[in-house]
Length: 331
Image (cartoon, rainbow, N blue to C red; front, side, top):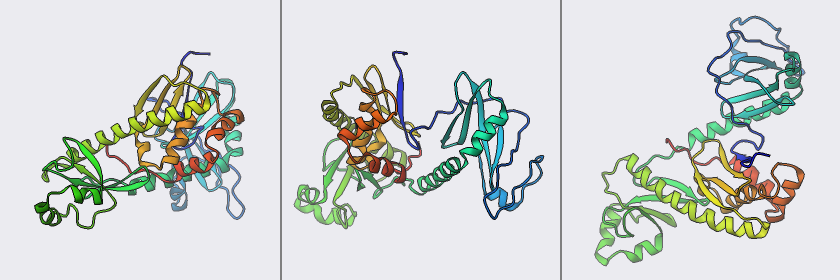
């Protein structure tokens, strides 16, 4: 076994693979019919004639697609690669469907395997498309008064050019405590600027002038969130490592777009700092998931039993991690 054998927890599905970029797409593409669902007429295998409107609406296309397959009423264009492996593998990620097959497997067997798995493939493709639509709706607008989740609670960003709530950077203050910290003659001015008028329970005060650009606000908030992420991750790693009887060696913060965390057999843990947007129970699940790989380096039933020993409701937390998309950072 390689000393750096690595297991990952993906944003979309635990079996999702990282697609390899293929810079040389094939010149020809193949359309293969699968049986149409009851009530639908199966389209015939054909050349690339102009599709009708219904087909155009019901399609999924990988940006590096080299083959196409018709599953019922849906055309799926997928990335296909051969390699040194024993079986055909499927993965659904942000780009769409990717298929890996051994070099010796004929294409008709690949097509048959895809047809057999068509309900799972179509469900995952649709879930991923819907999730990306939700992500597109949750883009943070960086300005005085912006809101974002922190450990499952909404926090409002307020600019604090006078540094009344701490030094450089940012500080999270309960609204009641923030008002108590103001000097008596500052109440009226603060309310006039909207700093404390109609504030939520938590306010993140950022030591920037009111003329700060969106990029400046975003950078300060991100730096604060990453500091909190490292602190919280270390605390939770220590907590669950003791329960599991394992020892982690190194923590790295990730900014990956499709992966929440990973663990290596040498004890190195990598966690996505954006997890601090999630509830603590969800964050705990990811931490316990990665630490469990230090005992069981696969996703076998024994692995999930290990996770359940410290997070009994891990299935519910895992679903929430998939269903509740964090806000998107234009970074």
